[in-house]
Length: 274
Image (tube, rainbow, N blue to C red; front, side, top):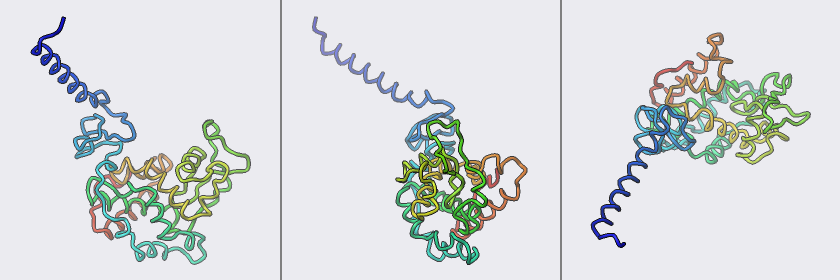
């Protein structure tokens, strides 16, 4: 039997309303977060990608990625700024000639969301935070490899997806001291080198070094930026420094951060230590 036009219209409106309600309810299913990589966790604990999620109070996830506001990185990281950091390293330091502003900017181009936040101030804080950690980890671009790193291979054999290779060591290399086989392999896939068979590439090619550092940053540090600088220290060093027994290192990182924020003309914000 054929439905009347009025009945068909009623059915159509009911289906449309149901679809609307379902789409609106979608993010609520993720209450208390656990969001996908392209989503933000709102201040109320829901996942989504609109301004209601990455706006004020965003707790975690792609908060600052989706906002997409930033200042040109090269306008802050000038030649004078970059060389000013390096100038504090000794003349015999391997990293002094290895690390260049251009290799850093090449790494930034490969990671276009670096320095993008919910505001231009967030952008400045992220760049300041990156250089604070790089400055501390490399001692002003002095080192490109971990001091005494060859004494350990940093192979986690439980990570069977990323098996270690005989004779290869996965100690810290590069501006953020990339470490462990489970970081080298995915970094290599992203950057374009064999992280397990050729981890030393990070200490041989300055562009690869900065791309690998920024890969780690974007995947592990960038999402926690809204929580303050202290959260970035926790993301990089974990309980190695944030256990309350290494306050000197934590405070040194925060000191560099505050100094760079001052240079960039931005307030450092709250929660500076972990």
